[in-house]
Length: 545
Ligand code: N01
Image 1 (cartoon, rainbow, N blue to C red):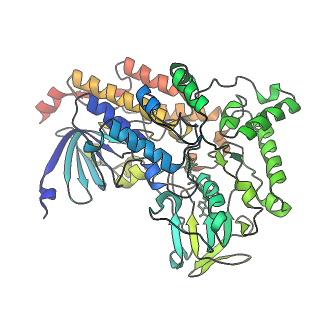
Image 2: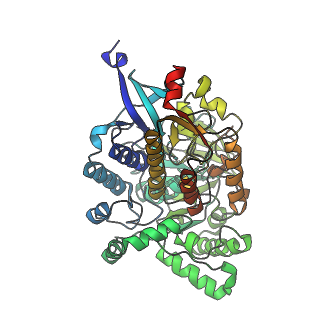
Image 3: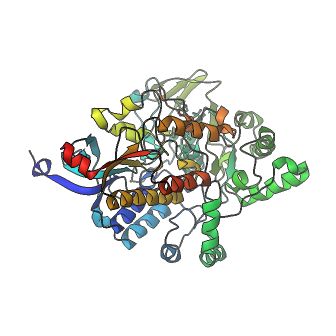
């Protein structure tokens, strides 16, 4: 037995994950004087930006310098972004800069996976184990494990027989992967597929894209950062922060307050054309205020993008296969750098899996209904068991030894998307039923991190040992999440927001669409002495013990 397995490390708070959310929580909790340790399985900071190193990986929303922490003007002033949609390499370099600037590194233990977490009711503490046998005891446990961190490897017949190179975009190797002169297959046309396909096509011998759902992709409009934009952000930081705080998705601009149906078609098309030329997700979030709420308005932009696909893709048969037919924006909106144009290359072809499904993989490639596709490399851009995957894999055990898989066997029960009934002193950042992926994520991480810090300070100041949602509050919270979704067009589409991409996962829409209202609600709950939570005083624990 190693000495590690004998010793128990004691902390006030443990955070799992060193991405945007975990680093911020560490900074804030440590500032309060708590003893805090971050455990991170990777060998560096970055979370999703550490793992997703596939070619073409970039920020889709929002543009630099707003996909970053907002709490410190110093961080804004000192980091120089290079590109408007920063590359994975650039975001990682930013997070390393922040880690060093705030001197976070000494409190992060890398290459360490937490493999077990159990709540001890006698002490009101979480007892953790790591993959190499280390034991840890902590009063508070913060899950910052990421929303898009649990890679989904599709269950396709024979896939393990494939003898060529095989990579998942979410677990991309650190060493350079060469596509030169190889026959490559990409499965998946979500953000990861659409960002990587144009890059892979540049040097591949041949690229076959296996598409199940065609996408409404918008040009990213990536380009070097304009120094005038950065100067404007730095000089008007308080105003930009106010827009981000007040807007529905954390954008640094005032939002449109006009319906798409208020403008005549020629004016509307000119608005869309300008945003198409400029690039970025403003087209969906800022052209009009009802694109995600009113189908007739949504159709105007959907038709505009379908027209663009027809214009760009020269082969009419391929263009037809690329025509999206779901409600625009209700799957994660994708932005790209030359995606549709890639299908005009001689070395690229598209297989429409709806008409020509995969039958099985062999050692040499893949057989679809209509033919054989010999491959040297397979790229799985098949997404993630989003938002809940990583926490369920850890499967913490709460009160009475009940594990999370059991507690969530019928649906994902939470309060505020941050706490789970029966799992005291466990906080989630970007959890299910919080705004998570449909809000500016670094900003959301800050606001949730601040709430956790304030909550822990409240507990400490008032001699409270534990906090957890009161029975039944989770059902009320679920109703409010559903009510917010029902006001939009998200409701009718199968997507990873609703668990549709993972076999056997609850079909439950797990993103809170309240935006600013959600964050105001967090503040109101705290102001009302943590309404909806039950707390146990330290004396009660002592006398029970
Ligand atoms: O994953 P996805 P992703 N056979 O789930 C297909 C974020 N992100 O990694 O739509 C065949 O979106 C699946 O088909 P369908 C961003 O939030 C951000 O691309 O289910 N196909 C789909 O086409 C994004 O939304 C950035 O019919 C199969 C694709 O695989 C999220 O991460 C960059 C299949 C999966 O698309 C996930 O994006 C990249 C099967 N068995 C990602 N299984 C930024 O820029 C799945 N598919 C910040």
